[in-house]
Amino acid sequence: MKEWLKKFIPSWLFSFYHWVWALLGALVYRFPGRDLKIIGITGTNGKTTVVHLLSEILQRAGFKVASISSLRFQIDEREWLNDLKMTMPGRLKIQQFLASAEKAGCSHVILEVTSEGIKQHRHLFIPFSGAVLTNVTKEHLEAHGGFENYKRAKMRLFEAVANYQKPDNFSVVNLDDPTAPGFLNFNADKKIGYSLQGPATKSQKLDSRHLAPGARLLAAEKIKQTKEGTNFVLNNEVFKTSLLGAFNVANALAAIGAAYALGLTNAPIRTALERFSGAAGRLEFITHKPFRVVVDYAHTPDALSKVYETLLGYSQKGKGIRREGGLICVLGATGGGRDKWKRPELGKLAAQFCERVIVTNEDPYDEDPAAIIEAAAQGVRGAGKTPEIILDRKEAVARAVNLARANDTVIITGKGAEPWMVMAGGKKIPWDDRLIAKQALAGVKGVKPRHENG
Picture (tube, one colour):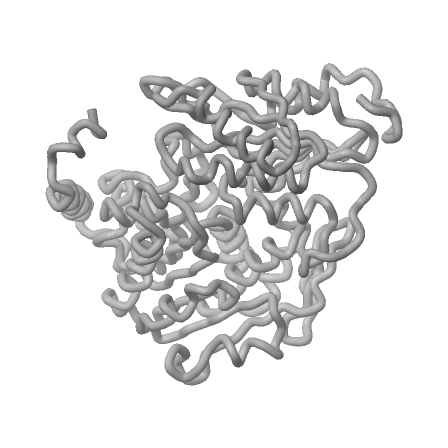
């Protein structure tokens, strides 16, 4: 019905409708959040990890924290599942959440802010103190009408920070992203840039046009992946995290930058980094033996390539010695009705990195799941590999586990820890890739050596 109405109702009328609901939500709950430090985290990838890590840092520093991510709602010590299949809740619900956080005595609120949420004005009438940008890569192009519109939607969060003009407001921006200068143009009392490129290049990334005097620059050096996670050097001090991959160092820097902007010292940051095990379904290892099984939410080409590179043991620059064993990849093909351009691109990446590729179902909604899968499979074939096509996602995971040999890695991407699979007519089927993987592993009786073919 909604898609049908869009064909006949002007877009400005839909925008006004969403604006009215945003205002109504603020009025009903009396414009909550004026005494809270509200930080918005936006970007294509990494938002959820940054929300959870920053929450952990602030809690370690002794603050009462509330947060909303694609995975959970949190108010102080109370947490509950975000089962809305919507990262950023509707206008009334988000204002109600802010009012509840105030009532519970929270001082800080961290919100995962999406481009679709901004498009529907869910960010309006929220008095943001700070904004963090992880990255901007191609995503939701059809919904926004192109990359520039998508990027501008994310910029509106930084515009909101500038417009509310709360004391000590701040912005934290990934300097390695080509879009960084545009986000740094918005006014803020504190501006922090972070980079994986080291101090030699950071001065080339920013200049006086974009940085306020005395702005802080965070440049990670000597990034090293270990058996326990990843180490890096920041301002001549070593930081350790159990998270894997250079992309997670970038996520850590985003959270550190926000923590610095909020006046925190290294002590709670170090503790949180070392103890933070990651957000559920984000490069989450289900088992390490007799082979590795990993679940990850990656559903964009940029995120998928970084996950594959990390699991193959690549260095930050894409060079290095590949670990013994190969990748067996269970690939979703994007949800129905959106981002059709991604499907062959995801397939090409899987063919590039994976020894075996199994393409399967993933939230088809009202679109034919076989057509979605075939689009991804064409990308695999176009890159010179022959995919297996298994419509039933549970069967696809079981097949991947049964193909695995010692030292291999089974990587299941697309859904992470999402609690539902959405079918035609909006029907939701309870789901969890992690549970499905565990069930498949329970049926594994023995594992052949790596040199034997399956």
